[in-house]
Image 1 (cartoon, rainbow, N blue to C red):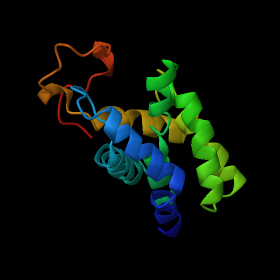
Image 2 (image 1 turned 45 degrees about the horizontal axis):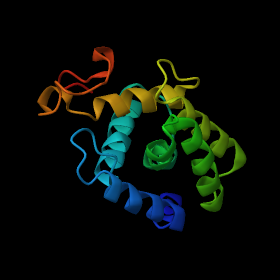
Image 3 (image 1 turned 135 degrees about the vertical axis):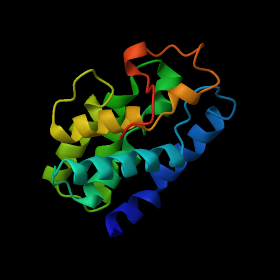
Length: 158
């Protein structure tokens, strides 16, 4: 997965993930670190195979790695992270040799992944997998969480 390796080594990805780690250092709730991003990718991959969705592994991993890239901006501005993240992700994806059609599909998935309904199949896969990656049922801070109950993952499900 050569292009995925390019993402992980991209200076913007490294800079944002490093700053995000510092900002979320004392965060009580869900952390948006590399472990979370890879958990989302792995769940997406499982669902992709089980449901015969036909997405390439590199598309899945690239989308998952970049889906929360706008979180740092959200902390600074209080705006939703996904639309801004889609813009950042598109630039990184182009730098990492994804073509325009791939970039557009992944950016759209990232842009809508936190909506109730994603606007493309990859976005729906991302939205569902992102939710499933969270162990809300085990979280010690679950009673303080401001997520709507419908969004919380309440069991071990893939």
